[in-house]
Image (cartoon, rainbow, N blue to C red; front, side):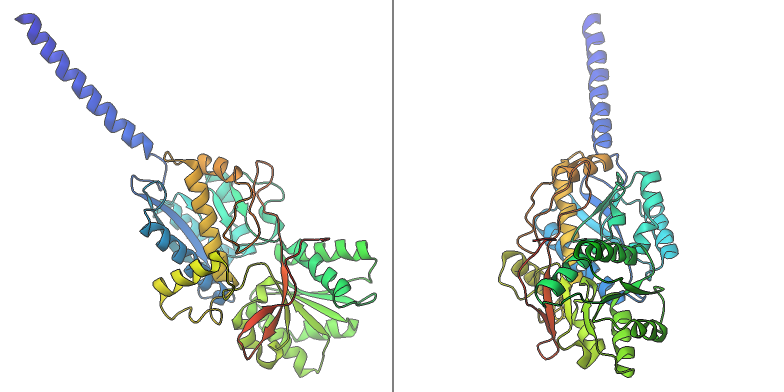
Length: 407
């Protein structure tokens, strides 16, 4: 009888140990910051009130649209993705403040699609110190992944390749002979990438020296840049600028009756550019890296349907209102979700990094080219098309097929 009592006590203790072990196992499974049994919290830092707000707001809405659709379908391994958005007004200092708030107060798991080269660059030390992924960034600067940073990924055709592609278009499609090319760019890593690309192209194709004029991200007067470039008498001027800055530059050039051929990088491929530039947007050539919202491909059909469902008329009708940064946000959310899915149910920050590095030839439903990463490359291969502005149709129309550098 005494032995049976002891057995009962031991059984109860053993059962208690099993219960505690079960609780601990469950806790450990969701011990990563920002990850619970049913939620993954991510931080989104964008320009909602600054000089690039037109694009920044679109990016956030595109990302939100994708996550809303994904969450309705059950999320990732049963977890809904909660995106917490902070405004940095395109300021690196404000981006750092926002990041600290997201990490301490909101306890996020990762940053998704932080907006802009300069603000995102300011987050690099935080990502490295705190071992928190930026997956991926909303920047096409090679500084996102060159040199390689363990916790930082980027998506899309980088600015170096964009500049080379524009030069190749000038030479091969416009048949320009020994053209003199100038660059108007922002005074940061973004602008440096365009300079680097143009210098590579200049040497490869034995072109004249490239005249360059840069501006600060918060500049509002571009008269000196226009006058300085006019003195150089270029045949073509590449605009590697934010939307408002590019439109203001074009208007300043018009005042001075200066009419070289202007070609924009992907940052100007928005209906807002045509609206701000007015008649100057008619025929404006812009290199675009994503498909157009009115194209008959699965990815865009899905994107447009989700946009209409979650935002009503805000981004309708497509393609008049949906712009490349909305598409960029959608794609960045898609890539993060793919990484989280591959990482498995026991999601950790390092696990996400390893999973992102395993992505090979992932098809974003035709919206852009195949997406690949590796342990030695956190940037993606790039393709682009030249487009032309149509003010009446309120969109940029493709005038070439998809191309890669040198192809």
